[in-house]
Amino acid sequence: MAKPRVFLSRELPPDVMRVLRERCDLTANLEDRVLSKAELIAATTGMDGLLCLLTDTIDAEVLDIQPRLKVVSNYAVGFNNVDVAAATARGIPICNTPGVLTETTADFAWTLMMAIARRVVEADRYTREGRFTQWEPMLLLGTDVYGKTLGLVGAGRIGQAMARRARGFSMRVLYSDIYDPPADIVDELQMEKVSLEDLLRQSDYVSLHAPFTEETRHLIGAPQLAMMKPGAYLINSARGPLVDEAALVEALKNKRIAGAGLDVYEHEPKLAPGLIDLNNAVLAPHTASASLETRTKMGMLAVDNLMAVLEGKRAPHTVNPEVYG
Ligand code: DGY
Image (cartoon, rainbow, N blue to C red; front, side, top):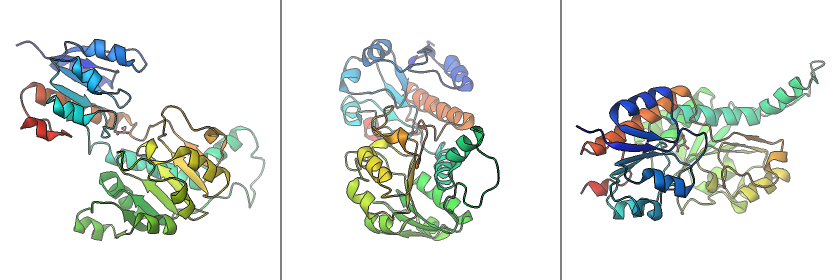
């Protein structure tokens, strides 16, 4: 039987490439760059399946030109790059990769929190510049993490993984979410539900773990930053547009809050003017899930999703399951 024709928009880890080549008639973009929309449309035309990244915009224009396309498998848990309503209207399943990146992403959010609180990036720079000439009582004083209050905006899988880490640091854990984790998890992790306003007022570290939707755009803007403690830190490893980045730059510049650890940006890969000049921000290039193990697991799950649909089955993770009827 002929293998299904699949387009992959960017090279993935070697094990994933091997499995894709075994299971599909694969065409892949092996150039180290994001394709333009026109290139993506041209390359996807005539394909049965598309395996794409969060940097690819999959909208009605892309989908309309694909009469043969049966599935879009997104290599990410977030799917705000896809117009899901447009896909649903065309009967196309959109798949994502939840679960496999939870712990790795929480590890990185925790790393950002530790790095900004303990000034690790500044310390590294200071040491490399040859400025470490003696031990000093007041050198690079940071802020403790253990024993402080962690506020989780979003208490889904990654939020809960953060709460689990917080137990080891003897932290009080607050959360705000429209959904509640299962009661046994709330009890086990001693998570306290509060309003977003109370969370912002009480937390020493505010960490964002909500999906990006029109409702969550600028969830943290100037009014919310003004509610945070002056010594508090904001950590964002979720999606950039959750934060009004210009307002954050102002708050950091004016020391309205103590600092921020950011992995995601409002207009990725661009950064808000002024952000790179601030010492009280630690910046990463959207690498929270970037371990070889996890990026491989994401790829394997994306392939499982893709192949299930191409073999006439329901994918393990479909964000618009109503397309299956
Ligand atoms: C996701 O999966 O949504 C992350 O942002 C990238 O791993």
